[in-house]
Structures are given as C-alpha cells and as structure tokens.
Amino acid sequence: MAGQAIVDRELTLDDFDYELPDELIAQQPPLERGASRLLHATADGLRDLVFADTERLLAPGDLLVFNDTRVIKARLLGHKASGGRVEALVERVLEPDLALALVRTSHRPAPGTSFQFGDDVRATVEGRREDFFLLRFDRDVLPVLEQHGHVPLPPYIAHADTAADAERYQTVYAAQPGAVAAPTAGLHFTTSLLDRLRIRGVQMAHVTLHVGAGTFQPVRVQRLADHRMHSEWYDVPLATANAVNEAKGERRRVVAVGTTSLRALESAARAAGGDFEVQPGSRDTSLFITPGYTFRIVDRLITNFHLPRSTLLMLVSAFAGTERIRTAYAHAIAQRYQFFSYGDAMLLERTP
Image (cartoon, rainbow, N blue to C red; front, top):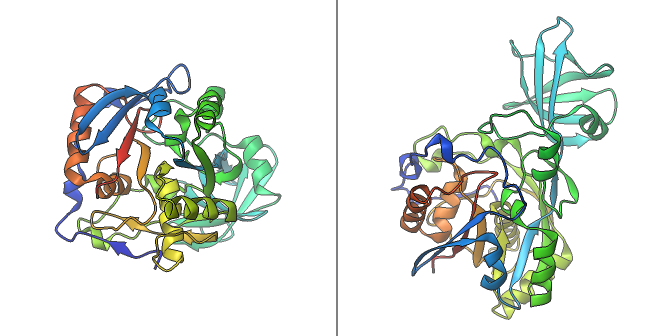
C-alpha cells in the first residue's frame, strides 16, 4: 500500500511546469542561517514575511515534526584500474561494507569491476538494482565517506562543495547519518529559534527519513499514474507516534517541517491501516502524493520551493491546492524569491 499512487488522472506532467529565471536558483545559503524569506500561503491570500515570523505563526500546543536525518558525504571520486574516472553517489548503506550507489563511468561497469577511491580504498561491483549498483568496499563505508567523500550538493548548484557547505547543507538538529540530500526546509531553523519556540509552548518531535538520490531523478512519464516513486527508508519512534496521535486526538495542529517529514508521517498513517493516527516503526516508503490524495496527519507544511515537473511540486499542490501553488510560485518569481535547496521557504495551510 505504501507505494500506491493516488492520482487525479486528468492531470499530466505539464500541469506542474513553470519557467524559472536561472538567477533565482540559490547558489549559496543566506549569510546567516535563518535569514531567509517566508511566503505564507493561505486560503485568504499570500503574505511576504521572513522566516523568523514562524515564531508568531506557530501557536502553543502546535506539534512541529522534524526529519533528523544527517547528510553523509556520499559523493566519491575515483578511478578504475584502467585509469578511467569514476564518480559514485552512495544511495544507501546496506551493510557496514556494502552500499547501493549511482555510478558514472565512461562504460557501464560489469560485476567484478573494481574502483579505487583515495590512495587505499577499493570497491568492487557485485551487481545491479535497476539504476543502482551494489558496491562492496574493502572496509566500512561510512568512515570512507567521511574521509574521502564530498557533500552531495544538488546538480543545480554550480560550485564544488566547500567546508561551508559541509555545515550549511545540514540542519542544526541532524542526528542520524544516511541522507544523500538535505531535508532543506529544516535548514532555516537555528538553535535560538528552536529555543524560542519551546518557550512559546510549541511541541517538537522527530522522525528519520533518509533522503535518497532519487529525489533528483526527473519524472519521465507524461501520465502521473505511470510514474514509479523511488523508495526511501524512514523511522517513526514510539515517542513521536504517541505525540502525533495525542495531538490529533486533541485537535492540535501537526506541522511538518519539510516534505520528507510529511511523507514519513503519512506513510506511517497508511501503515496503521489508513486511520488518522500513525504507527511507530521503521519501513520503506514509495508513497507518491499527487492531487486527489487524502491527508490524514499533517495540517501545515513548512517547505522550500521545488523544481518544475517534480514529485515534490505535485505533493505541495496536493496539500495546498494546485491553483494556490501556481499563484504562489508566480508571486514568488515576481517578488524575486530564491528557489530550491539554499533558497527561501513557504508555510502552507492544508486545503480542506
């Protein structure tokens, strides 16, 4: 059930397209974390704010749910025995020394092909899973990534990763290593803002969803029902499930910080049998949310601006309404908001 697509069949990929000037794609984060703009989109219209305004937009008793995944330095640069260049993007660590990875070489590598990363790390191709390769390393993968890996910045960011990216392409509450892309809505939160929200009476909980490389894969079909969503691992701790279920029972708002938190919560609700509560535990999800989906858990969503023709743009359109999102994005472009991972944020109210 987690992979079932719920689709308005009259909509096609073209319904989620828009033109974005290149100069509105944020190439760097703001000089200070949290110094971004915030577009509040409601049924009554749009408000241009700053992200610090979330302090007054959230009420005592609201439950903020964060994704505490930690971005790993998943991009490895190396070479084959022949000397040819190799680039590997680790998607998931399956065993201490076994990883699933996208591999870019001059020729598709066959099983048994070996790569070298750095001076002394070797990985051997053991097989394939669709677009990904199984790489067996000669040592544990995570220390290799920490020593030799690069921050896996999205393809629309033009500069090579730096020490500044290692800090800023990471949330201040990141705890569980495993993501190859940041849960970017969380990049706007500072420790001081979190402290002020706690003092205000806003409750907080965490899920973990390790964002995969598939988040950057384009939708290649015109008919949305034909799209196969990439699978990602998530965990909803018992304490978080209890907090969410209590909030729903008391009619307090559940506010997802980012589309990954939303997908984890909605997937956990589907695991509970489709009720308006979440089930704790760890699972894979390939939930594809498009207009027509019935949201069970999340009432408000803090999110960044998403790429044209992307599954994330479809998700926010399902959440806030397709026309409201079209209007909001047109407004953001006209007002020169910054887009994508290092860009500005939105606060969306769910369409009844």
